[in-house]
Length: 480
Ligand SMILES: [Zn+2]
Image (cartoon, rainbow, N blue to C red):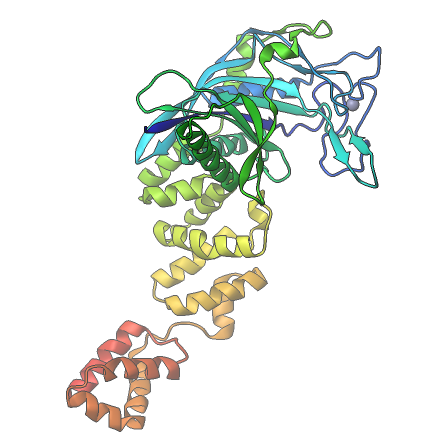
């Protein structure tokens, strides 16, 4: 029997607010354990939560960017469960009345566009962190993360493959980064994803038993884990077995999913409206105000890069996934170098350097190893024939170390391409004199020698001779 996969994703995105959702503690990552805490986020008796307005603003911004309806009236709920990193014994979340509903994100799959519907986006607080087995047989609790604001973004089960899941997550992360509401760092856990996976016979509309897969810390992990889980479910059914609703953890070392516990159902959490917080009432005016601040989003920017700069779709996609990259490109092309050549340098050499140097994903333009105007200047110099492509490669390396304008480096190092007829002719003559043997061979019909002679001339001019002129002059002289 042929099966198809049905996948829904739940993303937890940590919001980039300065302070926590219900108290004034800092949200900074990597602080000494329990430093960013107060009676509210430690869950001491008698305290009351006070909502951080910025969290709601970020949630509305995200809702608008993903075509959601923004509820004018929503409510906070207590999600009850006990775990040592959750000192109150419940998490403040939203349940039956979330802030955002019925949105969608578009992805590209098999060359076509596909809408992945969003069920809901709601706000909630994060839990702390348990650290096990530090010294011996006990655990420690760090509450720095307790009360850090999260958005939970839940998709409909519209995703049909591991690849689509990965595309959806990349689009979503890109949108959050453009909005500057989340840094999208999967390793540090500020963008986390759980997946609900089931399979069903192709063409069937009924849903199969689903498992929830957790602990995927990179896009690669998501793809591998989902591929594994889909295959595992197919094998279980093929062998006549039954699937159980459970939570499974992705083990990145062994590349398998392992059963963690049977999955809880919503009713296990005994949700009820939080009596400490008023319902959330949002006025139209505020929504309009936030709407006016929406930046151009990755999808729109990609389309514009194609139409305005004539870039292929592949380039436009790569350049617009991250807002800083898109901005780098746009500030480079302001001075009119060839856009496609500029794009090639960014996607090729510049990305390579950023990868090699393990530069932060959140680079600001000022921190890029080469300022955009310098890259543009270099591309223009190649266009104008001032430097050869080969020289440009070494010039690029030079620019990396110096943060100086390429024109200055070229002048200083005398790298400029030689295009004057006389000096190229002289170089050609010298090489022909020194290789009379090869010249005779060429004239006797051994065409291959031509390339050798060009190589010798380029070597004699240290790569600076205009190659097109070298070819023309050499051909003329050999013809004589
Ligand atoms: Zn606090």
